[in-house]
Image 1 (cartoon, rainbow, N blue to C red):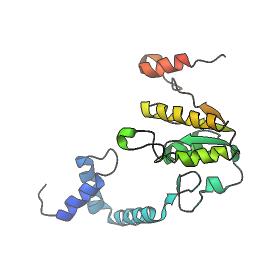
Image 2 (image 1 turned 30 degrees about the vertical axis):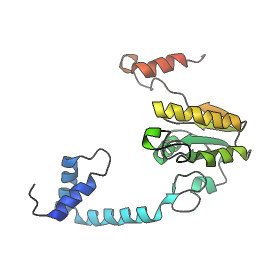
Image 3 (image 1 turned 180 degrees about the vertical axis):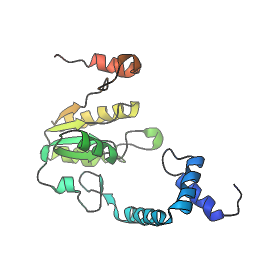
Length: 199
């Protein structure tokens, strides 16, 4: 593309900050917005500015919130003895949408990863430890992802729970419903086989 429109090139480059969006996808998005949906582009720009300026984090669970305390933490209908730890707000949303879980959450906003500069302080684990020591939580449900970092984080969380005399449990990992064994990766199948239960 010629450099006749620096602003267009800047728009394309800005769109590349989105996950999974490469140069071609960003170019396609920019051209679509300018050619066919300028009103949609204005609406998108406005919502992005609003979200960036007005959405922060809940002081209790650290998920995204427009208020000091999110609706889940502020609501009285949740079981405060259950605390589910997830890596990201999108993981929290997945648990909410797919399960009947009615407890509370703690969002790490990452996982232990020293190479990325993410240690216990960055994940708010001092805040979590304090919450566990308060005595209201009876079970810490660890719902980190089954990656190397996620497993290391789960181990650290289990130690925090034990130190506070709180029961720690780990969500099950294994063969997905509808999956066929021949297509499941070796690590997942080994974990599922090793964690088998009586029926």
